[in-house]
Image (cartoon, rainbow, N blue to C red; front, top):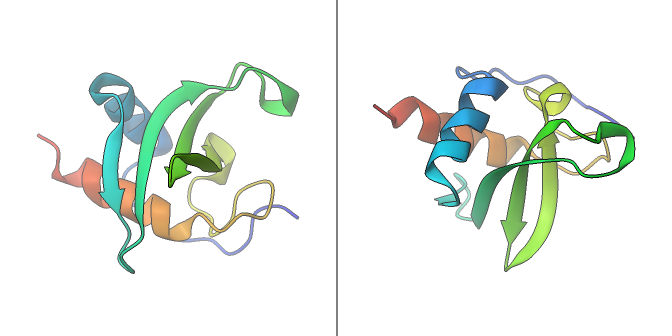
Amino acid sequence: MGHERRKDLRKGFADVWSSLDTRYIQDLTTKRGSDFRAFASHATRGSHEGEKVIIVKKGGREFARVYRCCWGHQTNNYGTRIGGYTDALDKWAQALR
């Protein structure tokens, strides 16, 4: 498992994480129409303990975690496909003023 295929995102992880941290939970939709919620947090256990993380929830349940090292890849550390979610987060962050 691990990161697969690179993808181009215009905003960096730190910018998106800070924007989420300031604005709390955001309800977003992927290009393919999948609704999700995203928010900024810190990992509380595991190999990423203490690190900043963006948590993606679908249907009220945690679906994926996006760490700094995952940003700009199609999958996260655990092999979960995150590309559509990071695309939507990147687009959201670009639209902020």
